[in-house]
Image (tube, rainbow, N blue to C red; front, side):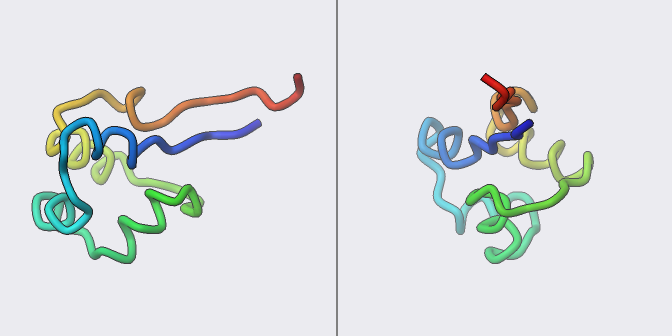
Length: 70
């Protein structure tokens, strides 16, 4: 089971830098970078909500489930 984080894809689609997203969401660059690279172990719903609001997207645009059994 794998959850893929597509934050970098959505940021590119919206032409938004990590610095700009950090300012809009109120998270540190290091925390956003950990999330962007897929190294995060968890994400709070409140954080996901702020990111979705800033990027004008849905949670499913950022998080994707891939069944790695196949």
